[in-house]
Image (tube, rainbow, N blue to C red; front, top):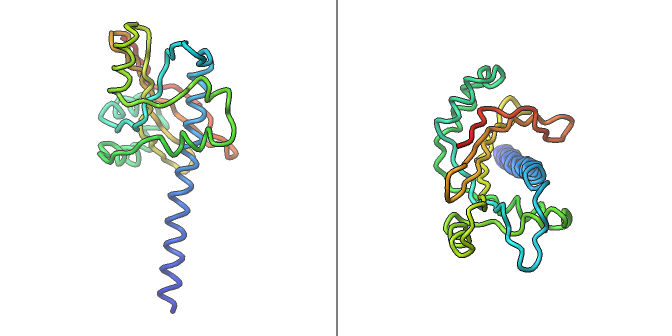
Length: 187
């Protein structure tokens, strides 16, 4: 009987950690969408969407190492962050996306519209034959030191003028807040 009880407690703990991380992901995604869609126009009939949201979570790569080298907090937690590089699992933002817009945030939803795959974005760009449409790609969150998260946000266009940056989040009194932008570049 004791083993069953311990197994149940372990299961509940693991389930709670997974559920908690999804809630963190939702909060962080909402902050990112609010920040980058703040100046976008509301999508109405026959108006092009200039900024689209990529559905999949981009995997983290060696570019994270460069960001680590430029920040003291990241240097102190480098081993924990490096463990999250090269995670090849396929993940998407649909659960978090749907949670954000399920009951509220109607104004933000009218700007974000739907998330797209790369193929759908290229099809829309080709159809409209305009070069100023962008695809916002949000990477997999890397949590460390109990209250921090590092996440890459990139903007892709069919032509040049791509850009990228890492956003360092801190959980301050239960609210995820961007505290620093690291390793920002633009072509």
